[in-house]
Amino acid sequence: MGESVAPTIKYCIHFIEARNDYPQSINSPYMKSFFLLICFFLNSCTGIPEGIVAVDDFEINRYLGTWYEVARLDHRFERGLENISANYSLRAEGGIDVLNKGWDTQAKEWHQALGKAHFANLANKGMLEVSFFGPFYGAYNIIELDKKDYSYAMITGPDRSFFWILSRTKQLPPATMQSLIKQAKTLGFDTDQFIYVKQD
Image (cartoon, rainbow, N blue to C red; front, side, top):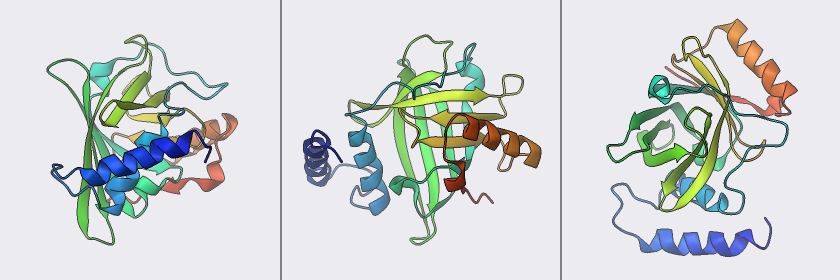
């Protein structure tokens, strides 16, 4: 972790631990790790990995609703979670509400985090910025999308350490899954490290 990151992380830890008005305890390992991730985004929060482009002709109304996480690269804020989903809905004042949800297999309880998103550039480009913590936004780049049915999507953040495959159903057909994994490998993602999320 670079020197420029450390002060931001320390500030976020202080801010998080000082707050007591969250509906769910911020001191749970899942929630604290999740918010610290957002703090990390302050130093490399937006943009897209070199050599990768976000999808064009994106239609946000077709993207709304529930998506299931079927594969990802490892991050602390999702460790120990199964049955992970994300729900997207339009905000009355503009932008998008994001509700992430996952089942903690050790605590035997659901964890959820409510965030907000907006387009990074054009509304027909699959580049968004998402925040789960005040003014701190992280990149959400849609780099592959089933434009016919909006049945699957591949997502990355500001660099190749962030990767997710999302599906409208809890499993994707094996041929579709293998095709997406192959494409991800071609784009430079470490597919050997993919985690395949249990959904039931």
